[in-house]
Image (cartoon, rainbow, N blue to C red; front, side, top):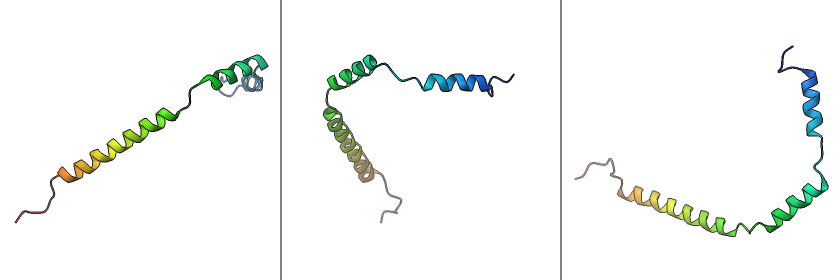
Length: 71
């Protein structure tokens, strides 16, 4: 019997995926998520990282030698 196309294995996996978590587990997860800090600091860090990347690109464009011959 091929292990990849085994119908009984498919049924067993489907039955395991249809199980709902216990109410206690859901309550613990929700309480833990509620205790997490707001993600505001990460947005500020990404803004500074983006500004730094833009500055590097602009600096590279200014410093990069052009292909035009000098007169």
